[in-house]
Length: 262
Image 1 (cartoon, one colour):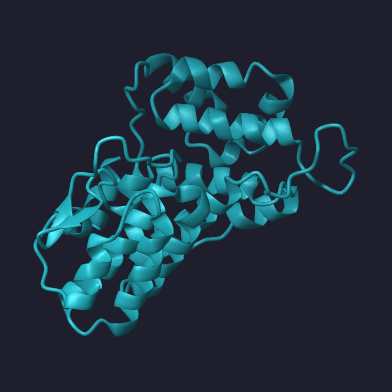
Image 2 (image 1 turned 90 degrees about the vertical axis):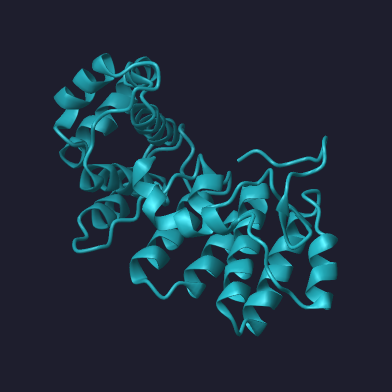
């Protein structure tokens, strides 16, 4: 996702750079292992609390990013919120806040109604919400056939049409793009159009309430918050394969070390 690169390029570029640290922090860094991602988060908090130099701030951000990338389910939200708190730039902080929201609603605990329940309170069908979210995800990733397959379900399509005004070009353009862009060739979208698609997906997944979805989607004047919870290493600006601290920098992890999939 090209739109992300200017935002996180500093963190990516610094991920393997040599840094001066105290002997105590050096020892804790060398003890880190991808098998214990929480240790990255804890050390990040300690480094951030005591940071007095730009290098220490960068190190804390790297530790938070690695914690989130190594274990997005357990620690992704906490890592994103920690990074948001460290950002002086409101736009960058907003991206991390949105990432935290997206990682949160991606959990099985999201408060969506069961498909068989009567939905007289304005709640949305679980399968329809998930179907729309999958259609949007496939669309963004250039998987046109998969996106169109989701709309073959009448409930999914009905919900999709309900919110079509928030989809760039509406249903017609969406389907045309899906037929045109295949094999991971992504549709040509402006930053604002990509943002609106993310807002639609987030709104629908944030509780399954139609009124909440409408409220979230109709808010104006918010900063662009383009993030991808399916590609957490890019969103966190780190390379999770380089998660071992050796000789003052991040090195490739040991062969066979476990890394959690998002």
